[in-house]
Image (cartoon, rainbow, N blue to C red; front, side, top):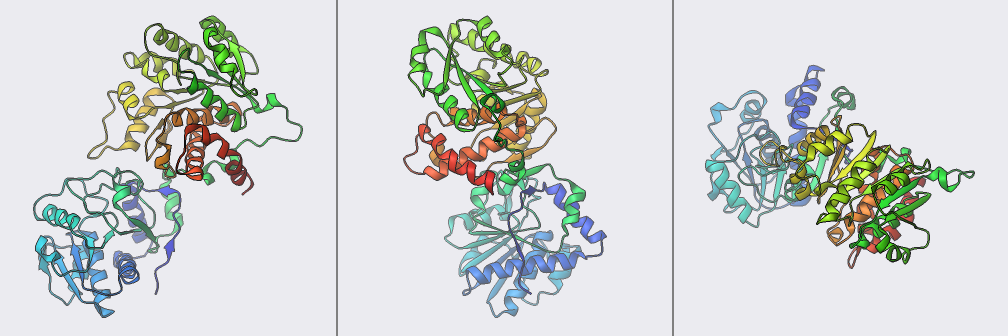
Length: 503
């Protein structure tokens, strides 16, 4: 029976949750052997579809991943393919379903060695799956390193061997797969770099685990897709006026004026009814030379800034882009942040984060009373603001980093990168996957912050605003493509926003 391939569902399962799904399915009457047979058939089909000719080398590990490899080898041989099979460790040490399927293999079982790659024309990497918890070593590492140096096409089972399923980190070594076949739901390591780049084309196979099992697990991780927040997007009514759509205030810097201008325009394009730049008087005329729809308020000091934010029609504030961290600007930026945290909703980006590098607890204490706040650090800013949170590596990854930081700060944390992670204090998290390398341009992050504050000004909750803002940011970058500069991003938004709202 042909494999039923699943469209990439948004839910992501940690390795421990995938074990729960397997166990619940087996407890419900589906045997582990049945699950392994269907998994092996999916692997064999991927090989036959992509590389219908040539000798297949199947590399099997000592666990269930190796068991899947034994099934694939048997089915490929039955289909007339020349198959060699290599096993890491003694055959008599296999247990459970893997041992049962090894007993059904009638060909030779060769000891794993890098030299076996000679003569192979396609390789099935079934050594280790997503549950690998320690670095590869010995002959396994040597074989994977040799595989990585070869030009052989590779079909990986679950994940490329050496990739941590929860973090995407490489444990010792990993080879670039052409295709990765995984089962039921994707793992975080499929979407987090470097694992995401090593998986090649990811194919998700239905192996007979029911969706009711997913409901019983209630995963808190997902890919950031519009279905998660589309229904919550603000939609103006015919009788709406500008103040119904919110008033966003963006703090402007005295020198680097472009950042606040980019962010303000982005907030306006995102649908905020009004956007005001709180401008130092010496720079106010520069800001007034920008788009006429953006209001400019001369704000001489912290008291004037507080008075602006206290106006009843102001609904959200963005602090940080271009605000300054040198000399007197540093104190003024910190002052603006602490005053803004008296609001209901705020976004803190760039300089608003860096100024608290030496006193993060001051920021976190102030955030405790803010019902809706978003912090948008890149990894350097993150390291300065959250020095106690372990960096990615081993069993810790970007998801764990962002969740720990969100809990510590009591705010939504958007940890930027090619695999941006957005986490809420309650442990919910998403991975954004639609970024383009063309977003690596000056001012791009200011536009992202503007998108988010524009949504929050209209009443979208902080987590949903951060998720939607990140997705639209990626979509706008992809829509423009080569030659992108930050000024181009917001002008891509109306069509994309309309498509999402009307879909």
